[in-house]
View (cartoon, rainbow, N blue to C red):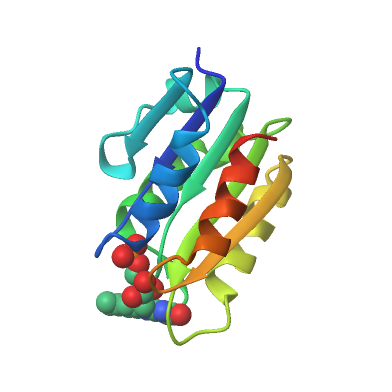
Length: 133
Ligand SMILES: Cc1cc2nc3c(=O)[nH]c(=O)nc-3n(C[C@H](O)[C@H](O)[C@H](O)COP(=O)(O)O)c2cc1C
């Protein structure tokens, strides 16, 4: 099983840029997948689970991440989870709601990184730090 699992959804590449930055610091011991093809067992088996989604709908997760996250939500107790994603006009409600779901599921939330539209260097550095915890 991988040390770190990175599963993400993206529509225009912004959240994907964060996912790629996180992957860079993980070396080869990483399970990296998009939410529409991610394996729940591989994800849950990792020592650290990093999940990424843009804000969509009205402060919702992107559909494929909503579907993937719902499928593992009941099995997150005791896991270490970090969240990241990109947004535009909102105030980050989508990721604070997501954080609440993670902690309600009994997981330990190791951090969140939210980038306004295209991630800047500071966002990429923050997600790299998240991946190395
Ligand atoms: C249909 C749609 C719904 C969106 N809903 C929100 C929203 O509720 N809150 C927000 O802050 N941004 C919202 N956005 C903006 C996206 O989160 C933003 O463009 C983000 O950078 C997309 O990241 P991605 O390239 O990883 O998909 C929305 C964009 C679209 C196209």
